[in-house]
Amino acid sequence: MKRSLFFALCTMVILACLPAFAQGQQPVRKLIYSLEAGEEILQPESAIAISATKESLTLVLSKGKGEKGPFFVFRNGQKKGPFTKLKEAMAAAYPSQDESAGIFRNCSDYTPDQGLLPPDAIPSTEGDESSGQTIIFKGKTFGPYLSVFAVMATPDGSRAYFAVNEKDKVWLICSDGRKVFIASAPDTIKISPDGKNAVVACTGSLSPSEMVKLIASQPEKYNAEMNKKYVYTIDGKKFGPYGMDFKDFWFSVGNNDFFFLDGNQLYMNGTPTLTLKIEPFSPCDFYPSADGKRYAFFTLENLVFSDGKKYPFPLSIIPFQEGGQTMIKWVALENNKDIVVYQRAI
Amino acid sequence: MTRRWHRSVWPLIGVLLFPLVLSPLAAEEDYTVLFGAKYAEAEKFLRQNSWIAKSLRLPPQETRIALAVVFPEIIRFKALEDKVQVRALKVLYVQYGRKYADFSVGHFQMKPTFAEQIERDYNRLFSTEEKTAAEIAPFETGDSSRLRKERVLRLDDLHWQARYLRLLMMVMDKLYGKLTFASDLEKLRFYATAYNSGYASGEKAVRKRMGIRRFHIQWLFAKTYYNYADVSVFYYSRNVSPLRTH
Image (tube, rainbow over all chains, first blue to last red; front, side):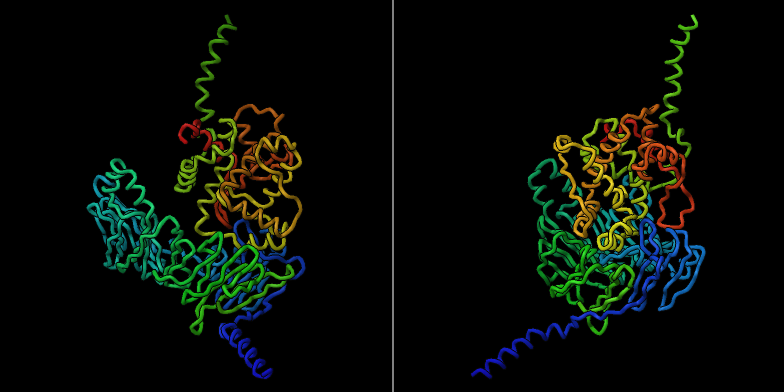
């Protein structure tokens, strides 16, 4: 009797622990570099020169006061320097513009970099509402439209998306020919990291002229409509209406699925996946797994995983896909001198 | 006769010179051109957030000065907001404190060092009655990770940035209220320089820094530096009655 009880207990414990082992819950820790006496990571007013990718970690180090140097660069496991000029150190640290992005933006909410676009791939809007507005992208003219609400190009310059009013109907249009009716003017267009998908969130489903009419004639009906949110994709999918609890919609870095949050309910590609209890919530701090069922979340003090484990003071966080899992790599400064990299699956 | 001539001509000279004093030309450079769209965005931000002016709870003229004091920082924030994210710096400040406190946050580009100083000065310079009247409780003192985290969260909150700006004006009045300024523009120059370069260093040091060009809107490798107070004065001069438009 005692023996069977013991076996039953052991089985329960093993079963309870299995998911933890399967997800590789213990992070791999690696000491990358220890700051020498008098050495610090370069810290100008609006950034700190520490950046990581899936493969590497780059640091710009200063041994002088502030931006005076001498400077050293730690990259691909090697330290180079001294550099007397900061420009030389930065060039050695970040040979291409793409590589330095991590020191500027460390955020899970994907934002396409419009600064990298070639000049002909920067969409421009011409004309006004009296003559009609056109959009010029890579030498091709789109329109004229009654008005242009939002324009966004993919960072590789291959596509542009725009939301326009055409004959009192609002459309989300892609330069590759896709065109979908959306109910009302969106504030912004969100693009997937691969540039193939675009999503908008619209308030209400009134056309521009209906809106003007209802404001004056039926303000209550207008207000009720303005409390509704709809989500549209460039491929013609529509989700909603959602109510006043609709919080945000976004793409996460390295993930081409789109997410939105209505109250505490997280949706991935329009399907409910998780109930979140994170206050305050910011998509910038939220790192979802590929299936949208697990996550890691950044706070000022910890990186918190959905299994409840917390890791203190993450500086730079890099999500990536490996072996069918979403991995998180993060950098920490321990003992005020040790640059340590951790990695685990979400 | 001569005296009468004087009496009659001075108002005329005053009327003729007044536009020059308030004119953007007084600051010599046209910052709407130099900063382009970012200047316009900063103006739009203040127009769309008229609650900031109201929340300062200052007399109209002081409100104009306060908004002009932070205006160049709003330009800088607009220039950098899409590119730069100071999350790692916030983490290091919460983790280790003062050594990592020299970075700028939010629309008014306030630094943790500034917030620490203002909190200390508010606690020590204002009586319990004054604090009650101001409806701002004294700040918890000490230096712990928890307090630093709370400070960073305050700096991340625009309503708190407006409150810190109000506290700056109150503290400046306590520290420098007895100084006489030739004009509101001179007062603005002093306040703007103090805000940008450290108000606690004393009158002499602030005055010494008033002509220095150290303001820029790049994250690194700035090619051109501007005089912070000039930008404030330029904005102020173009918006002689900003409160009317708000």
